[in-house]
Image (cartoon, rainbow, N blue to C red):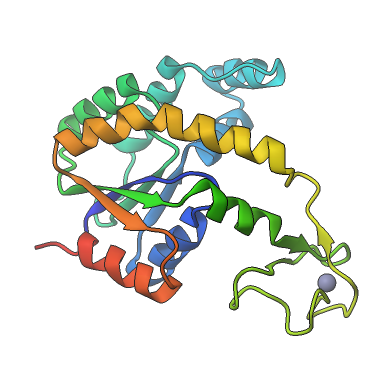
Length: 218
Ligand SMILES: [Zn+2]
């Protein structure tokens, strides 16, 4: 299978697709969020610096992210394909990533963009509910993710609640800023002819099928 650089706006379903590929096709899921958390936990000098930046509400610089990714790529299990999630976020990161992939002889890469409109993403986010007791999450807009009984937890039989962090205005801002920041990166990969656009509103099995078809080695 090809390595996948995964680009998707919030609520497009990147997590679901990643889980599917990890479980069924032996992918390693490399997420920058996880890498940052691991580095901080390790107590390394780099980790301490990152912790300080994040604690002060700052953004981790390109330079740091590139360093982290460089480290990770040299430690890859070469027998496993990987999914890159959250990197690159800038053109500089994309260019550096190209260099790193060449240096580490990682060929056969594919960029997937999960395409979803703001309206559709918003509908999904607003449909998210969580059980206040067992914390299981559901989505009322998705037949596969909704509870058996309307708005009642399958496990606990109590009423589900809206997630507190799912605020419409905040989501709109986050979504639009994501699109704006990602546009140059999509153009970058489009020019290299390795970008595959996938409709994130397709039936889930159908979407898996398309992605797996693209990711299979020719
Ligand atoms: Zn519950």
